Each structure stands twice: as structure tokens, then as C-alpha cells.
Image (cartoon, rainbow, N blue to C red):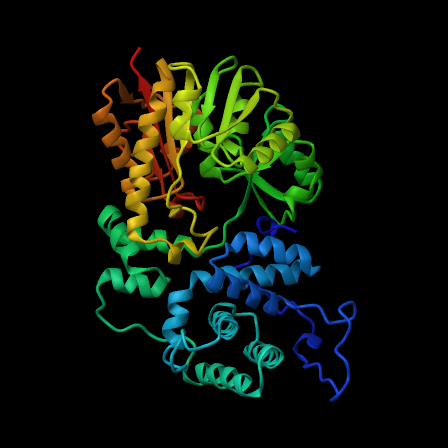
Length: 494
């Protein structure tokens, strides 16, 4: 079971574990512990507590930890959905949660054991944001887990804190007349520096919309492999199978699925008819607009989604060079190419800054640089980004992106295309990075001649396509319910 396959239901998770989940297993003094084979398996809240502790203490990634824990747990889909909601929701609302708990627990959070603070955080999250989980069930389960992991004293602390929260009111009103940045940061649980940056770039109204969108669970989306099927036929097949799916309003190759279960485990995926990809990300290959027979380079390719999309649009004719700096990710790209039936993908391993030393100068019709970035556009998928990024990270990444652009530009043929993309909404990494590159390299210019299939849906959505359109696009997370993404298309003078 994979995290991206869990259908979250915001504020709609029911009590998924049975009544026995909330009963405490008592052991007689002197009896041996239960063998592992007969020991009661962990429930969704205990699994969530363990994951949150590892994220808190070890800097683990939420998605990887969830995938690993859910695959090993053997939980039902309903319990897995609850665990997923609790983990992501607790991380998303961490600042708000800690603001309340620091008023209830002396020395919060540093003086509280990591597992106990994770337990209190996830319990408060449920009390406030999961309306259909009864408060008594949340408290009872938290006390049971505290007794299991700690002792009667810490169980009493957990019980007292949570009952105090219920007594005093779960929702704590914010102080009146706060400055916009502080109010938005407290209301939506974001670091203040991030909100201030977005207000400076986009204004307070849009900044708040970005923050709110980052706390909404992502919907499931997939890209149709046009070499194996077409969107209409795939949607008809899904409808026949009882899967609720429809066309993406963003990408001509995209579908949105609800109540679809695990798309990765379906025959459509195994037979290479679709790939899991966010709608915004699908636009990158469409903007590049590769043609059959071209030579195309994807500089930072792993896990390979954009490389595969380029090859599909090229009708599997030509060459797609898929490079990544990490050798262990080469296998991921090769596996995707084999599953999708794409023989023109050539995988490479190396630093993108050194590609101009490996590949012939001016040898590529299209160069795609999907650059390493701060990831501020994918917070809904990776909520820990809120808390593990700092302003200096944006600045250092902007410098790296400039170096990468400067290095790979030499590989573009005269008359060829250079496409730059990121999954962030920081202007330093996007628009300003491109402006700086163009100032240094007058042989390149922005190219607004994007395919009509890309521009049409963007025109129909109010406020998405800038006017006049120069050839750069910033999609914000609240506009389509997709990832925040930036794409620029540039042409090298012939």
C-alpha cells in the first residue's frame, strides 16, 4: 500500500478501528510477554505516533515513512487512511498545535519525551480537525498508548492535558488586530518568514490562499500514455470498472480520479497505460513540445516522469537522454521506461553542471532543466517542508539554479529550446532566476509560442495566465488544486 493511493477525506475520517482498539490489554504479574506472532498489531494512531516521532527526531520524510509503515502494518484501507490523515494533518498544523499545547504543558515541547509529544500533537489534531472522531475515543486511545509506552504518571499527564483542552475549548481564538502576516501564519500554521515572503511577492489575499491550499489533501491524478491508449478510452474503461475519474482541467494528458483505490496496483498501470503524476508537472513536457526524431535532454530526471512524458509525445522516435546525479535512481528511470514501452530513453548518471563536458556542444533540440528547488509548491504532499526550510535555503538554491542554467545552455542547438521548471512558488528561484539568466545570455530569449493545448485551459482560468504572456508561467496551489509549479520556455537564437 502506498501513501499516494490513500484517498484522504478531510474532516470526514470515521472511527475506523474497532471498539477493542480502545481497550487496554492487561497482563498478570509474572506472565511472559506475548509472542510476536500473537501480539496485537498496532492501530492507526500508534503507527502515526511512531512515524511522527521519527520525523521529529530523525528528520525522516513523511511520505517514505508512511509507505514503509503502512506496507508493514497490514492495516485495512480505512485504518491506513486514518493514519495517513493524522500524520499529514499533524505536520501541517504543527505551529497551531504547539501554540495550544505550550499553554497546557510546562516546558513544551523540549521537556517532553519525543513519543509523548507526538502523541499529544496527533491527539489534539484529531480533537480539533477530525470532526467525526469522537472526543472520548481520542482521549481513551491516547491514554492507552501512554500507558503502553510509558507509565501511569505520563498517562495521567496525557489524560489531564487532553481533558483540559476539551474543557477550555478546542479552538483557541487568535488575538485581535494582528498584522496580516502573523494572523495568516497562526491561522494556517506556517512559519512567519514564509508568509511574509509570499505577501511581498503576491499580496496578502493570494498568500493566504496559498497557505490554505497547502493544508488540503491532494487529489489523485495520472498521466495517460498516448502510445498505449487515449484519454477517452481510458476514462471509459475506468467508468466500466466503477472508478470515478474525469479529465484534468490543466493537462491534455491528465486524468483526476476519486474513489479509485490504488492506481499503481491496477492493470492500467501495470500495462503502461498510465503513470502517476501531478497535473502541473504534466505541463512541462507539453510546453517543451518535442517532436519525433528530436534529441532531447532531461538534466535532472529522477524519478523519470517528465522524461517518459517527453518520449511519449515523441511517439518513441528520437532520443531522450535522462540524466540524474544519483546512481541508485537510474534503475527507477529504467523501470519506468520498460513499463511504458519506451525504447528511446537513454539513462545517464552525473552532475548536471558537468553535462556540457560529457555531451557534444549544441547537440540538443530541447534541454529541460527541472531544477532542484525549495519545493514550496508541494507542501500539501510534503508538509514537513514548512518546518525544515529556512530563508537561506531559497537563496542558496537560487544560486545553484543559476549555475545549472549557465552550464547546460551550451548544449542547446541554435534555434533550439531551453525549458526551465521548478515545483516552488519562490520568485527568487523562478522569475528572477530566469531574468538574471537572460541578462547574462542575450542569445536566449523568452518564447511565448506555447502549444495551444497548453494555453487554452490556462486562458479559461481567471488570473492564471499573465498578460502580456512572455513565456513564463507560475501556477499557484490554489488555482487548480494541483502543485505549485513554474515553467519558462526560452529559445536560442538561430
